Amino acid sequence: MGAKISTVDTDTDTHRAFTAWDVGAPWVKATVYQAATDGFVLAKIPGDPTMTIAVDTFTPPTTVRVETNARDTLVCPVAKNEYWQIVTGQAPTIYWKGIED
Image (tube, rainbow, N blue to C red; front, side):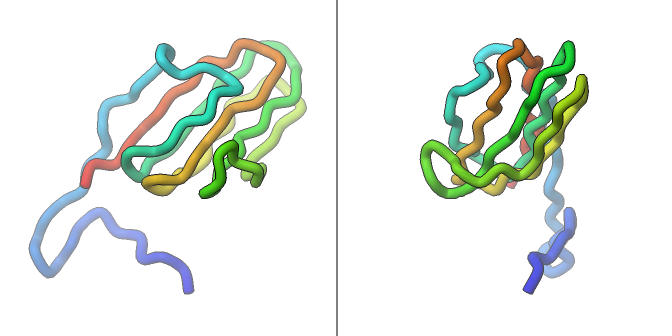
């Protein structure tokens, strides 16, 4: 079964909201991070290298969720407590967009 996708809990009328974009430092390529909230990781890459985003419950994460071989921007959802890592030979700009509880 797929997860329910909603930003409003209709039983309690509470709302979930996105956090502000968290850009640049401290995000560093090839470093493993654990998500404190549900959210999205976004990586913008200059040039034309290969770049992957791996996400799963292992550290380091081993499941490649998105990949490109061109100058590109990748976005990948990450669940709370999952690990994520950007792998590339270039210097990407990395953003985190969390979802508040």
